[in-house]
Amino acid sequence: MPPSPETVEVEYLAPRHLAGGGDPAWVTVPLHRACGWSHGDDPLMPRVILTSPDQKAQLRLEPDPDGQWWTFLHAADDGRPAWYASFGAHTPVEIIAGFVDALTGPHSTHGDEAEPYGPLWQAGWGPEPADNGLVSPDATAYVQRPAGEGSGPWVATVTLGASRPLWQARFDEHTPPHLIAAFTAALAAPAPVIRTGPGRLPTLDPNRITRTEANVPVGLVAFALEDRIRTLAARRGIPPAASSAPRRPPDHPGRTR
Image 1 (tube, rainbow, N blue to C red):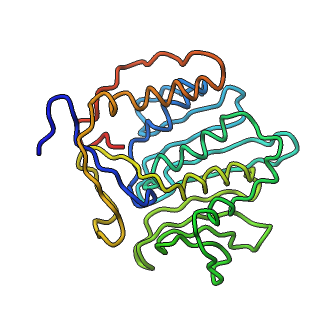
Image 2 (tube, one colour):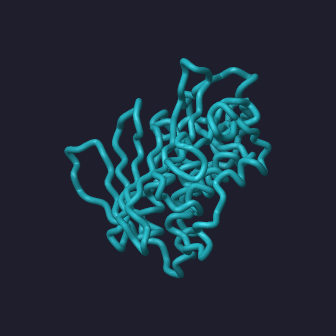
Image 3 (cartoon, one colour):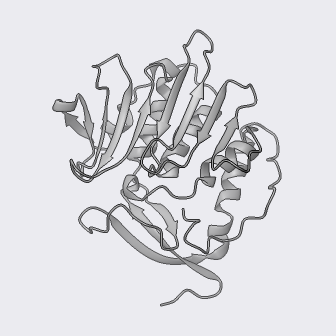
C-alpha cells in the first residue's frame, strides 16, 4: 500500500552493520549544534572539518568512498598521547554516533578500565582465534587487535566474504578504551536502524539482512534529528544552537538514514 500524504515509507534494517552509511548529518549536525564544535567555511572543498570547543579534537569528513571517509584526531591530553580513530564511508552513522556521543559526553572516571570486547561478548559474538578477536554471529563483522592482546590498534572489519570488504573502523592504540567500548556497543546493538528512500544497501540477500518496510508518520522521520540534538544538548545544560536551515523529511536518494 503506498504511503499516505501524512506518512513516509521506511525500512528497518538488521543487522545494523549491513545497513549502509546513512545520512552524515546524524553525526555532524549534533556535533555542531549540541556539542559546540565549530566548522570552517571552505565551499570550494568537498569536505567537512569540525573542531571541538577546546581545540583538542577534530573531525575530518572527506568524500573517499573506498577509504576511511571519517577521521577523528585528538591532541595529547591528561597524560595520554595523541590518538586517532577513523571509519570507512559505508560505516552506518548510528554506529559512528555511539563513538561520538561517548567522546562528547561526560568523561568516565574509569575510562581506561573499559573493556571494548565486553559488549560483543554480551551480544553473543564468539572468538576468532586466527585473528585474535571476536566475530559476529553472522560471521560478517570482526573486531580484533592484530598486534596482540594489550597492544597495538583496534580494528573492526565488516565483509561479505574475502573478496567483498564493506567498511573498516580503526582505533589508534592510545584511543581511550571507553570510546572503543561505546563503538562496539553500538556495533553489536540488536535494534535495527532506519533508512528512507532508495538507498543502496551492501546486500539484499535475505539470509544476510532483514528488511522490514513500514509507513511511519512524516513527523517521526522529519524530527528524529532534532530530538537527537535536544537530547545531546541537555547533557551540557544549555539549549542547542539554532539550525541554519530547516530540514525537511528525507524525500530524495541523497538523504537517507
